[in-house]
Length: 351
Figure 1 (cartoon, rainbow, N blue to C red):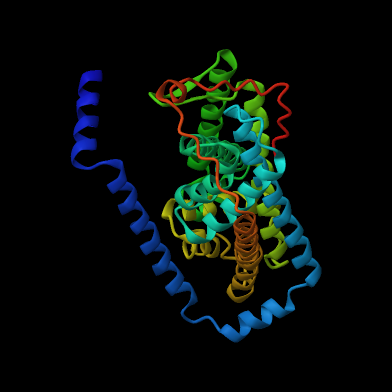
Figure 2: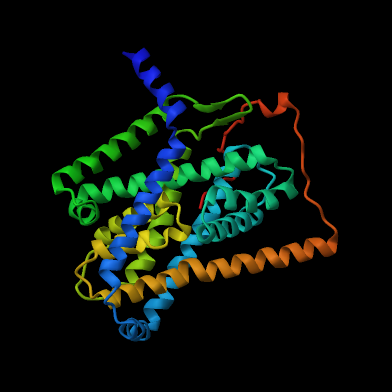
C-alpha cells in the first residue's frame, strides 16, 4: 500500500505538481471573492460609506491604531525568535525589529511575502554576515510561528464558537467543532513530538533544528499575541450594533486572513474583505465597509509608508557612509552543518 501511495505521489508531482494546484486554488479564491464583492457592493452608496468613516469615533480609531502598533511590535519578535533559533545571537534586537517590521510591512502590501520580505531581510541581515540560506531559515521559523499561532487560535475559537467559522465555510456547528478539536489534536501531537527529543528538518545544506518543547510554547504565545492584537484592532472598527463577542470576531478575522493569505493577493485584497462581509452579514454594509477601509489604512498603508521611508533613509545613510553588505560565502562543509537551537540562556525575548 505504501509503495502505491509513493507511486501516486511521484506521478502527481511529475504531471501536476503542488505549484499548479496552488496557482489554480489562488485563482479560484480570487475569482470567488470578486464575484461575492460585486454582488454585495454593486449597490453600495459611496457617500454613505464616507459618512460612516467620518462618524467613526476618533477614540476607537486611536485605540485600533495602538493595537496595530502592538501587532507590529509583536512581529519584530518573530525575527528575534528565528535568529536565536538558528544560532545568530550576535544580531541585536534593534536589527531584528527593523527587519521584522519592514519586511512584513512591505511584504503584506506587495504580495509574495516570502520573496519580497525575504529580499528586505537579506539586505538588512547581510550587513551582519548572514547569507541567503540563513535568511531562508529565518523566513521558515517565522512562518512556523505564524502557523502555530493560527492553529492555536482557530482550534480554540472554533471549538468554543463553531458557528463563527460556519459563517464563512457554511458548515454545521458539529463539523466545525470537530475541525477545531482536530486542529488542537494536531497541535498537541506536534508539541509532544518536539518535547520528547531534539527534532531536525531539512536535508543537505538546509537543516534546521526545531525549537524544543518549552521554546515552542513561547513561539505559540508570540503567534497568539500577534493575531489577538490584529483582531482587537478590527474589533474596535466594526459597528457597535449589533454586538458580537470578541472570540466570534477573532475566529472570523483569522479565517478571513488565512483565505487572503492563500489567495496570494497583496494584503489579501478583495478576498479578506469578501470573507468579512459574508461572515458579518448582520452589520450594515456601508458601516462595515467603512471599518474595513479604516483597518486597511491603519494596518497596511500607514506601516507600508513608514517602512518604505525607513528603508529609503537607511539606504541613503549607508550610501553616504560607503557601507557595503558583508556577504559571506560559506564553504559546503559549513553550510551543511546542522544549526543548534539551544535557546535557553541566549536571551530570547520572543515577541
